[in-house]
Image (tube, rainbow, N blue to C red; front, side, top):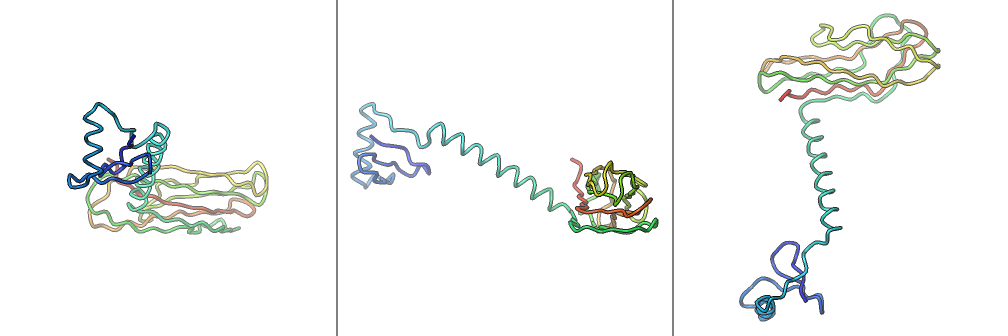
Length: 190
């Protein structure tokens, strides 16, 4: 009995688990070919369970590759907690992006907000080149210091070799506004 080798460069002889390379000069390979010519069939290189695991791993790699490509397009992350009692906008995250081609791009943002008091107002804003993309987004937590994830997107028509400056800003409406995990992503809209 034989088992096909995963790399298809030979077979495994199951009686002693010896690898037999696919080489006409090899006596063991010639014996294997004779065994096949008698109507025998080697075991597959992978069991159905192994194939399922391989497909799962391939899918994970595809997801990782898409994530890497997504992140390579342009992103910035500010994980730490920032606070303010000011009603004037404060800058949390700044990202400069220069597209390699003129095209439509998707601006994605996500952030977490809280306030020191229940129903205390915390505001956020997203700008590009000091022009507001979304302004005075408001969050009023139902409990003090309760964090809420907020996200959104906008389609931006960008010009090749022009630098665009994106900012996530925040301010207090009352009490202490808190922001963390502010992220900006920019990807080409294809």
